[in-house]
Amino acid sequence: MFRTRYAPDYTLFAVILLLLLLGAVMVYSSSYVWAEYKYADQFFYLKRQLLFCGVGVIGMFFFMIIPYGNWKKYSKIILLACFLLLLAVLIPGIGMERGGAQSWIGVGAFSVQPSEFMKLGLIIFLAAYLSVQQKYITSFKKGFLPSLILVFTAFGLIMLQPDLGTGVVLVGTCMVMIYIAGARLLHFVGLGAIGAAGFLLLILSAPYRISRITAFINPWEDPLGDGFQIIQSLYAIGPGGLMGLGLGESIQKYFYLPEPQNDFIFAIIGEELGFLGGTFVIGLFALLFWRGMKVALEAPDAYGRFLALGIVSMLTIQVMINISVVIGLIPVTGITLPFLSYGGSSLTLTLCSAGILLNISRYSRL
Image (cartoon, rainbow, N blue to C red; front, side, top):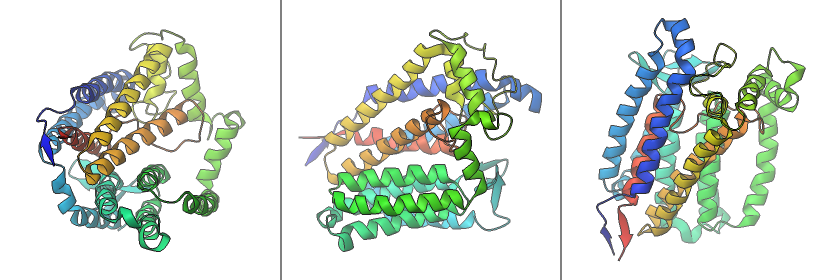
């Protein structure tokens, strides 16, 4: 039995709004040069970002008000709709191709990315499944295998686009949920061996992925080609020093770092706001993780715990991958930085996920 607290976790809410505000400022600071050059409007990306923020915040408040238990009732329908969207994006004439990946569906002047819907939809369904079937999760056939089939079916459809970065976030999030549910470590060891072999095949099957690996190992081998982006990212972070060059004073955004308002916005943060600015951003994400985990631990039922855990894991994994790419720790994946990067469906769905997390925070045990 549990009661409604009525008020959400104000600390978590404040962190989300602060990240959004910082994101809007940095999207403008990092993009106005490109926006002026491409669209003759230095506010082009900012205006769209504010629009996405507005839609996302409305979605966040909607999900924050609706009791999270309702999503359990419709989890199968939500998952089916997400699978249909993933299939639709692969159909010529419906799916739109950008950057070599057919990952978008056009809606008027805008587009949506079905893989973003799948991340949230699969978390909602898996939380419902694990809350009911948790007692079977130690059994390979009854609990572990059905979960794997579902997760890797979604992963396979995403890889047909292809979108390895989003696929990795989705699989990583689901594996965390399954492990916390009590799956046996031995099963994960076997899965890890198979996964490593499959990951190697995925890399070898696409020349551009091999190029990303070689560029990661030695970007200076091809400084004007595959290594260009990571080199320019490091050139942005390095001169930032302790205090940064100053807000709006980035050099790399002047046509050196490609579209810096997207995946590499953290590089501009490091250049303009320095080590202290980057540390502040990481601190905000650490605070978000802590408050999110607190929400998960205090949730009144198993479904709420798994749902909160899934959302927090998704956000944390995405942050870790994005920042690791920007500072050169792992190869380029094409993953946005939650709440900060310029984006439409990514930002909107992230805010909707945050709304569900805030709703869970409104409940506590008696």
